Image (tube, rainbow, N blue to C red; front, side, top):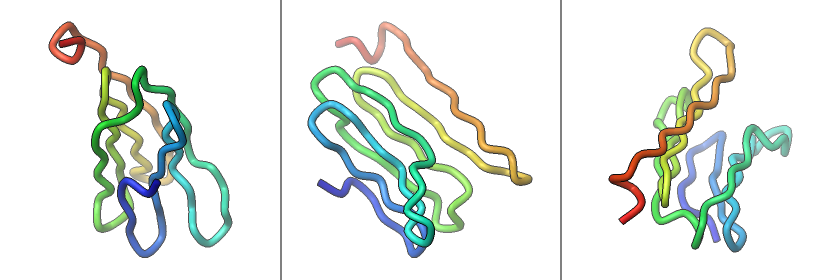
Length: 79
């Protein structure tokens, strides 16, 4: 199921995994696993960052050509 989409990227989930895909090249830019699956997602309209949330939050950004993945895990998401 597609969670979020822009002209260049789309985020979809398959069971408990989330995938960020480059539409033009079909490259997987990142994949992440979420217990019980992701609950929401957002892609910046300029395709510079994407956020996926569930039991944790994952931020992907590509500012200045550098791909970076940051995971945020706190007790707040465990509820």
